[in-house]
Length: 189
Image (cartoon, one colour):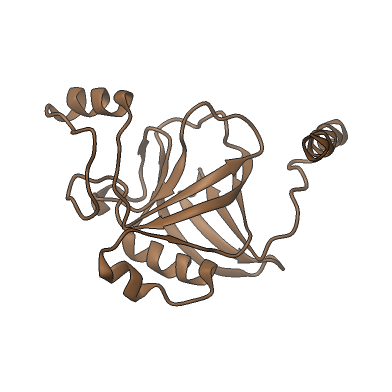
């Protein structure tokens, strides 16, 4: 409770002073998702650019964008449980249904080869993830229902940096694994 109250005071102070983003703590890396440029830029804690990747963003700018978050969990080779809304949307748009669950490696699994969970500094109202993709032809477009997608091979690269180890063999194994990453701040701008 005390921690939550302290965070609320920081957010309120930030808003009153007109600062663009709250102070969220120490981090080793920062990921910046840029809605206008359709890019994901990886920075070190000194704001030095380490890499930049193309993304697919939501079709419409969501309420959490701009916003801040932390990477809370990373799963490589994930399965996918599409929400009811996603399954309804897919059936209407694609003319065929999605099952309740798609296993890792399934060509219809929209998570691709990784799924990154975020802890936001504000309520977002729906599960938002950073993940790979099963449609590389849709990268550099605004068309998702909320999540942010990268090319699968870019996920291997930047998650290897965030975890401070080469994850190539873990991805290639096809096994579903939870990967520990360094403290990573996420900015949506």
